[in-house]
Length: 465
Image 1 (cartoon, rainbow, N blue to C red):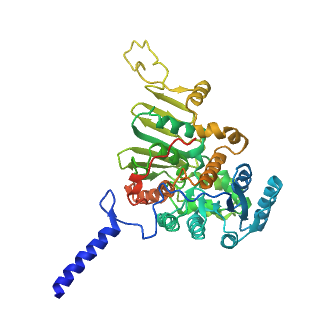
Image 2: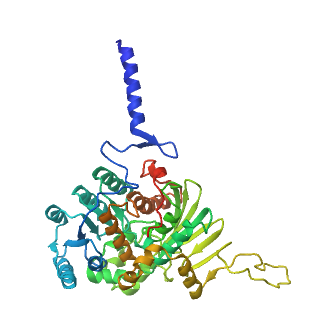
Image 3: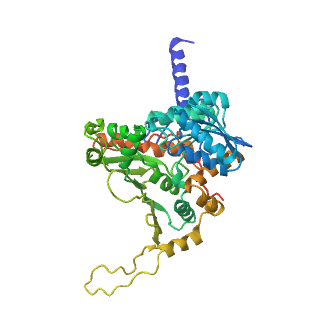
């Protein structure tokens, strides 16, 4: 064969290999296919585990309550607890032993714990910037990883998690507990029954005045969260509001997925003012430059053209709110307070005798709301998962208990998890993407397709009973 012909054949082969190893996203950009041996985790079911051996990393705040909840969940046992502070790990072990009579092993080195105990599932409750590396290490050690929100703080970190999950065939689920709230479960049930019609728009938020946390963090020496306010500017904590509405919309599952985001932040004034007022003049935070705006407002556009408003505010003194609003062609569901409206959901229209020709409200939907209305909605549309676990929900820590119960149940029975690794990656990506948009004056940022196009084959989350 002549050199020219060899070159032509080589070019054809190279093109074929390129086509087999890349695909294009919605914008026509190349997306690498997953390597040989890796699997798509969108509806992945791991082999069932008779007794799920659980280990926990990080025992401040949520760590110890989480540890104790496992004692009320069948088919699991906490075998190891780990914290950099030995006294915290020992306290958790003692509390567990007092509750159920079994003391877990205590560690200050989580890598050693993974090596010696080889747990089935590891729950990670550490500072945000450690989530990605710890999750990857847990999966590579053979454990399913369950990570507090957000899943990671960078796009690269999210890709590392996705790649490790696909490579190791291990689950990595972000612990978005709000998806298991009673109202959120009910709204999911109502959306699945078609009461809202075709979905067009959603609103999500995490509005929670947490300025006082800076003072308690100073007292405990656990000051990592404040460093994020100083170094970053965007929506740093998007998933509590976004997770539920994304599942209502089936985003990253068959129907639709994340396309792009625009984001803007307000002035940054509240935290500096709070520090000036509440901390002594010599405290180093008095000179800290809080880059992060007090309020961030972002808008997501989906591949199908739906929109989601996502707002974050942990600084201004306003009441707690997650919005939790989903709007469709037939109705609207909204939270804080719980209320619904629509063609099949509203009370009869209010008739008005306004003689001035102004807006009367005639033929307009009205909010169906108030304690009696909420009780009626629960009676008609309660999610069967809450019906089954509601008593334990009340006795334990609410939505966290249902979330942990479902995780153990799915691992024990060998079923797909309610939240897959790609959903956690998409929801968490709002953090770094909003930072990029803010830094560019609100310019749109495209979401990476963490599924490499396979979201179209992933069935929506069903109404599990």
